Length: 206
Image (cartoon, rainbow, N blue to C red; front, side):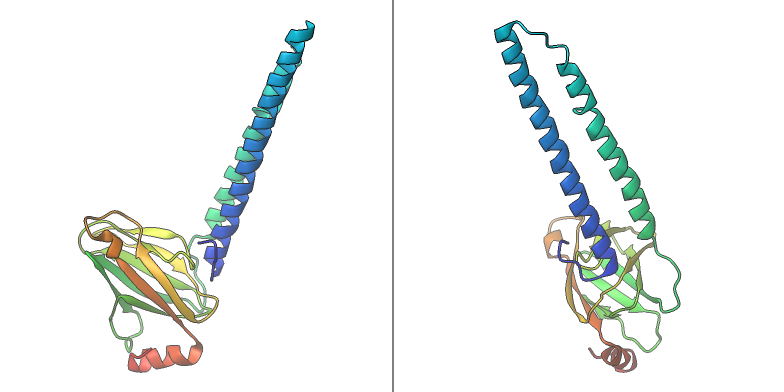
């Protein structure tokens, strides 16, 4: 997930790093304020000084800063989520992914392409809509380096946009507990360059 190989995965990785940095900043500030308050209280008690200024720091920065940061992250997350929604584009490829215990079947809109088991073939550098469903129980389609994950639900189709920036082989898996053996519920995504994609469509070979 932290080594993205496509635009959707890159967006998710960027969001993850921003959330991590923000979380660390909030934690560090709150801990610093806590220690400062304890130190100030100890000194004030020892010297008989007024402690009234402590609450301003605790409420102003200890509460105000985290709320402002989390609000900004919420807005940013909503904007990023909107960007990840599938949109129409001229070079879009559509494939169907059907999960079952414990395998994946992939079908392609192109009439010449074969049905494949355990390996999803896509063209590199082009957006791909994966229409995800299940033949039995709930599974989850996830290729960490290419996009986020989406559930495969019996009788329902969910659409996930993935894209591989470069040709290559990418590991996929089900990220939903769906019974004993689900850890072996894996598949592979093979991203082709233009020439090998044309061969796959014409001949059904990688």
